[in-house]
Image 1 (cartoon, rainbow over the protein chains, first blue to last red):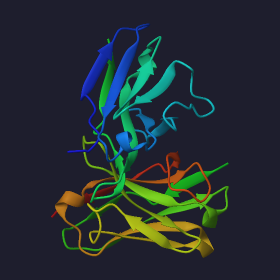
Image 2: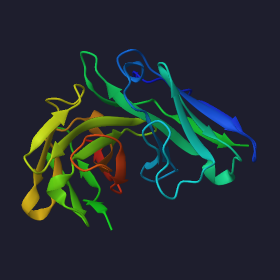
Image 3: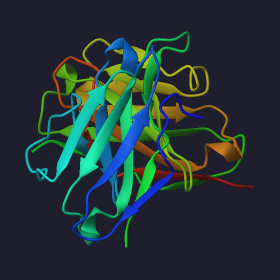
Image 4: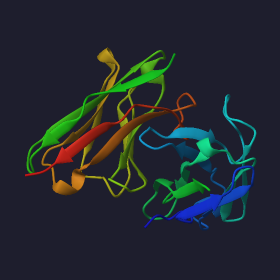
Length: 112
Length: 121
């Protein structure tokens, strides 16, 4: 059970907008640590999608955006496309007794 | 071009030892941390630990401390993940990954292709 909680699954039709939440606590996101997002297509290694809460690496379409507020962060995908079907993970740092970098449990996005 | 190339798939028996590798190229190997991430079958990503090849400073996730050993040989730009006695529960895909930012442990911008480790009697 991860200290960063994500919904197991979300879905949307092509062209729609979906959001994926990442809920933490006062020892991680709420403490001001940055949130990063990764996309993992089936059978491939993860790929950095968003870093520093809301920044996109070169090559990532602007359909993907990130935000952070309080103890939570969100990934939004607009203009949903079939190739967006993948697993998405948030990542941050947790400063509790078990201090470490942590991933969320992951969210499976299904494009209907 | 930054590349992380991992060693091939392994099939081992419980109790055996194993060392898998990750060779970095296209950048200054000693100037960037390099980490390991586990993904058990059908499960999510787990941050295992990370090493700075420049001085071998190593940090482990509490969940993996004492269970694995992370090392690096800067002369051949290679990082390692090692087990002394494998268990069936170590069956997983293991990824090495490098942060985007020099000298800082942060988000992983570069990933290896993964090494599948299967432990079965």
